[in-house]
Image 1 (cartoon, chains in turn cyan, purple):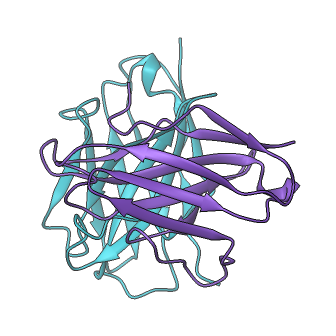
Image 2 (image 1 turned 180 degrees about the vertical axis):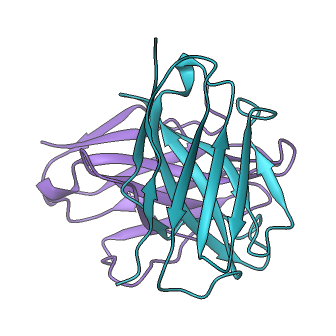
Length: 123
Length: 110
């Protein structure tokens, strides 16, 4: 069964850093765009970042631009989210989500989600 | 304040039909495909509709999607208690160069 598995969440102090990983075994690497989507406690979904299948294109929500970096290693079928200068408002469950291939910005959807990893930013 | 606007809540009786609206603009819904997600309590979201009106394998035809200009609608017929969940619309916003979601709609099956 194809699945996504996130890891790397935890408790971090304000101003600190974390790196999330999303392992994606079971489907061909380098084809599908991958996104991170987060959900603060009791709140709705917030898209965070996307990376194209090749890794050549990346986009970020304004709320994380300049602080978060998305990357991928297709040889390991893994996507990463490097999070720096963390703030209290970054506290959320972070989901890895698989997007489409090709014109992924136009054909925008997430057809596979991980279970999420909780990031808590607090002193 | 979400870029896409959804009603906070809707409700209907078992067996009835409900629709959930998602309103946007020409930079998002007007020029890109819309998708819909169901999030049951304590679980990750699940794709219900993609490319405005297509259902992934395994999603029953009780769920339908449509789009007109800068708005989209999710329809659910034959409501079941198991449909109680939060529902989100999503798309790409070409002006913001960002993915956007609606604020979510909580469905209650009375």
